[in-house]
Image 1: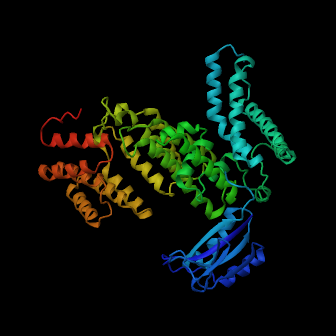
Image 2: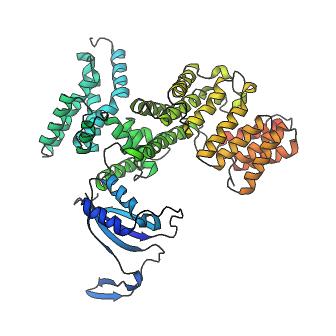
Length: 113
Length: 435
């Protein structure tokens, strides 16, 4: 199964001394294991642009973005056997400690009723 | 066996439901990966049993009969939907050759080859229903529905929610299992211990919901307590070497054994020290004690929160009278419990035990410290505990003030009535008639 792993900041990071592994090692491990398809760190929200089309007109703005202290700092696309494997991989990412990670499965093609 | 005795047949169907539901549904979920098809087919098999057993007689092996009927039903349904059933049929045939529970998952096949024990499908079901990616209330509902075989309306009634709400909760849970890729698998290694405690927490919640309704006038909901015990027995059967599973089962049995004595004829709460101990269910108590004895013999050193709580209940169970209770032994268990799982509620219980161990003032000091910490603000049992120890010390005025505070905070009517009665006894008056 494929998941997008959103890597986000969090206002309450882990305070224990256990720092886990560096992100480079995490990437290397999962590339070797075939569980990481692709991933990128993103520029901060201040460099983001909002695009909407309303009444045929494209509206481009610098915001507003959802007021949030937790923002997405990057993403990875995972190929996993199931959620438990994705959880295991996510929990080893350093930002699971310093921030938080959201696992979103790819759409399975079915509309929810 | 013939179908001459309708009561006997009905009893056989009921027994088969209790004993075989989980196995039938768990096997079908693994074979199909479709929870709804599996549940419907399992339910259908029991309906057919009720129809056919009176005429045909109860089969010698009801479980095998039900599994076969349910499997055929699954194949019918899938075929009608145009699903290619070859793979499902292959899985099922494999089960027949190798026995149910033979691994089909590649990782499990590897595990089986490496000599690991065969995995019972029912255990996969238990772990999947209690998966932490599901909301807690969905884990509880799904465990009761799919592992326990309870009907959705029954579960809705037990949790005092509309049937549609409960049905929706179950639909969403099953949808998330499918869409999020929650596996049908027993976790391994360190993860197993962590996830087992999640499974046990679900059973504890089922039990607690039955033990004390969080609001309103319904105090005892025995069905859910019995259901929790039944499920705990299943987990112990499937994981006999896990001391916490046994600990939880013993805890539930020893508490449930006191059900009849806990409420009097007028529906009022009877505290432990005033309960008629001859009304405790001796057989159930004996079962609970036996589970603990077995743990003492096989896993003497493995202390866990459920086992420690069960050991506290054991001290009550073996005391012939309330005065015989070994309170210092209970205080020691609470100390061990606090070391494992610090919690203000456990501190409260420890303070009460300390007070009853002949150190009322020390208990009160602890309670005062807890009150000052603010961690139990609004919790009625804190002033109730203070009131009780003050009463024992003969400080009636101070005690009455704490009872009044506890009455203000008490969340259920039976608890308010109990505290009001205690307050009235303190004043030397009869309890006011609350109608």
